[in-house]
Length: 135
Image (cartoon, rainbow, N blue to C red; front, side, top):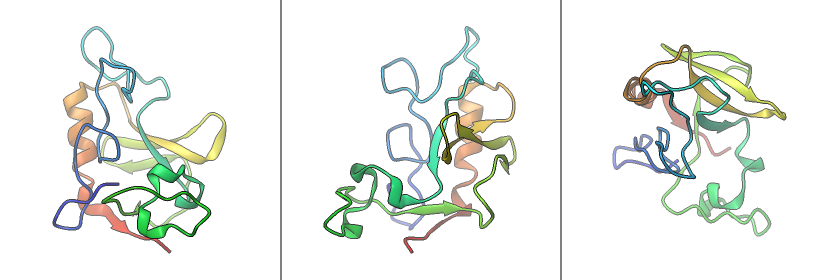
């Protein structure tokens, strides 16, 4: 993720931030129903079990090993929690769901369908729980 000057994840609504890209647009991370609530349809904040499996543009450039294509500028690898990468509660109002095709990547999604600003606030509220871990 991108880093704020205080060393914590940058909260925002663009790629590589702690938050989701909002509709409309082809890069939106979530879909909304007619009332502006987040649909519970397998979309949300993307996360990974291990940064080594990420595409190069999501790996901080200082971790370039000559093979991984690391090119993420101004980024660090943050982790949330110390337990296994299992589906379940992450924080108040949020849970981890694996993507259908892999237990190595997942999504942080709302527990229930909530207005988009509420979901963004729940994600932002976890900011202090993320730590840099590039091991």
